[in-house]
Structure formats: structure tokens, C-alpha cells
Image 1: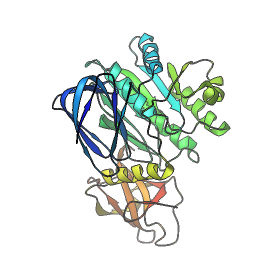
Image 2 (image 1 turned 60 degrees about the vertical axis):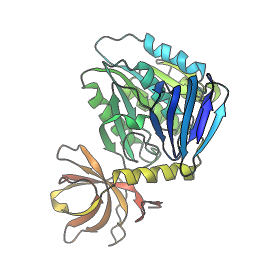
Image 3 (image 1 turned 120 degrees about the vertical axis):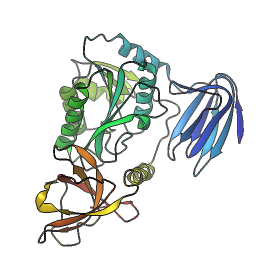
Image 4 (image 1 turned 90 degrees about the horizontal axis):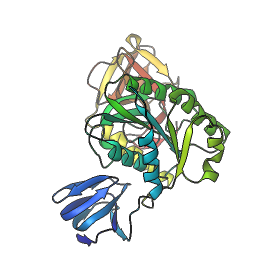
Length: 365
């Protein structure tokens, strides 16, 4: 379909969809697209096309795709206020570190994308550390990962992947120490890189309750951000911010374009991500006695009960190679079979807490 939208209005597109600009100019979270350019909106995602001049779009809708026109920009003024606070931070020879916190589905990834596009200057790298295990945008599900760019992007999943750390769970609730360990390890690696101007830490949506607050405070103590940006109102974030008296903080509003997702939709997005990282996977056999095995989950001792458990594969230095699905683990003969797209020989395997069926749908472990 063709859709003409006037200057100052926003075309909200729910994926799956493909959007092409036939004439005019529009902006998606600070990324400007002009005539002839197109953007793919993934299933379960929503993108706001803010029109900078009268624009004609060609929109192709896929499964569950839809469009909606709204009268104004969906980007709150508070986003730009927070951006100016970030730009005002002055540091010599070290990247500026910004942490984004808030509940599930308030738009933390969208705001992180906005920051990337507004801060990028074509010279220094902008790095996003994604510690949201359940809705990872940069690495596979159940990982902490980071990506980088010197160019603008429409989503942070388009960043160049740097590295990942396999935690093995979709929530930090039962793996707090492992989740913190992954964030710290990836952060240290980022800080050793040359040419990094800004580091944006995109966190998970676990913020309610004492354990959640302690988890975020521990993350702040370890990463030492220059600014913590909370998405939501002061009432919701107050208990967390009370523990951040020594760190600069600010609150911003969620975008009106935020696509609230029920748990089933979040699970579906993870399953699509499993497919992405297991594309072209083959069954590979490994001699377990020659590998380091870390059991972050509970590996059943009964034969056959291990089938379907999600695992992370590591190189000889403990670096992340990719994910796989454990199909068989023979403790007597000391060999295992893993479905994975990793082609090189791993030196270690991390047993996760998730189980997938043959169609890559999540099961209870």
C-alpha cells in the first residue's frame, strides 16, 4: 500500500513489514531516511517514522503487520533533555558511560537506539552493552552482549557484534552473580578498546523489589556509570534511585510508540532469535573429557533427560563462540552431541537453564 503522511506527523508501523520512502524524508529514532531507502520492521517490533517533510511511503505488511498515523512526534522532549545531559559530561581519555534502567516494555532499547544515533559522529565508536537476558537485541537469548558502530542504525540489533557472555537464563532472578559477572567481563573488554566515545548500558526490566534493586545497585557499583537514566516516573524508580545518591540520575518518559508485549510475544521474539543464531546448525559430536564443562543449569543424570538443554560454546580462552542445543550426553562413553552452527572445535561448554523442543520453542527445564 502507498501512504502519504504530512510534515510533523508520525507513521507507526508494526512488524512484520517493509517500509520504503518513495518521496520526502522521515526519521526513525534519529536515523534519517530519504527517497529510495527502506527499512524492515521485524515481527513483534514497532517503528515510528516521524515525517520531516511531506512523505509518501510504500508499506508492505507481513504477518501481524499494521500501520497507524499519529498527529505528532512520539519522541518525548525529556529524551532530548537526557541527551543534553550526556553530551555535557566531560571526561578525558575515557568513554562516557550511561546506564538505562526501567521496567519491561518501557522502550529502553528504543531510547538506546536514539542515543546511538544522536551521539554518533563518524569518528569515535558508540558501544551498547546489552544486559537484557530475556530480550537481547545484540546477542542470542540468555547472553550479555555488546555491539558497536560509528554510523546510525534503526535498531541496536544492527550494531556490529563485539562479543557475548553466555549466562544461560532469560532472567537474572536466579542467576544474579552470573549475570553481573557477564556484564562486568564484557564491560572490561569494551573499556580496553581504542576509540570508544560512549558506552550505553541497556539493562533488563527487573526493577521491582529488594532483590531487583540490589541487583541494579551492584551493577552500578561494578560499572560506575557517569549517568543513570530511568525510564518511568519518580514513584516507580524512587526506591532504586534512593540507593544512587552518589551517581547522577534523571528520569525520562516512555515513548508513545512503545509496543507493549505480553509474555507470549516476548517468548516468540526469543524463539525467532534462537532460529537466527542456530541457522544452518548441524549435529556435532564432542569428547567431553577434552572439554571444560560448566553447569550453570541442572544437568539431569538420567540418560535422555538432557535432550534440548540450551548450551553456550567457548573457545580455549573462555570466549563465546555461539549457542547450541544439547541432544545427548553419554557420561560413560564421555561424549556429547550438540546441535550448533559453530563450526570450530569448542574447548568448553556451559550448560544453561533453558530447554528447547525440536521447533526451538521454550520448554520448562
